[in-house]
Length: 123
Image (cartoon, rainbow, N blue to C red; front, side, top):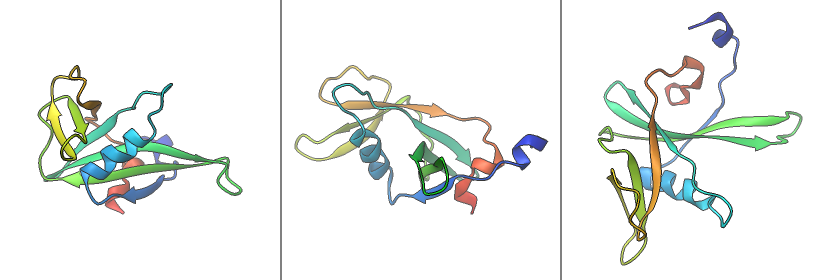
């Protein structure tokens, strides 16, 4: 860890109950003029961490409060996208195809190295 990273404070961490909840959260910010962002992925020991970075602007006396919203699963993703649909049943799955209009697709970005101050799941 660099000396600069040692001085940085960790963001607030919020753990969700499931990967489906994280997908719902990401897609809830989608509007007519906004596309969904991405879901980060990081391998931590025997689990897959899925997360998004967020910021609560104007948080009391602070300019902003950085937040990492995360959940964990046992399996690492083997495909590039998480897909979500609500037709018939609410379903999420992994896919390498993001072109099917019946699904909302979110790219998964794999982080190989994660600075310690961002690992809110260790607290």
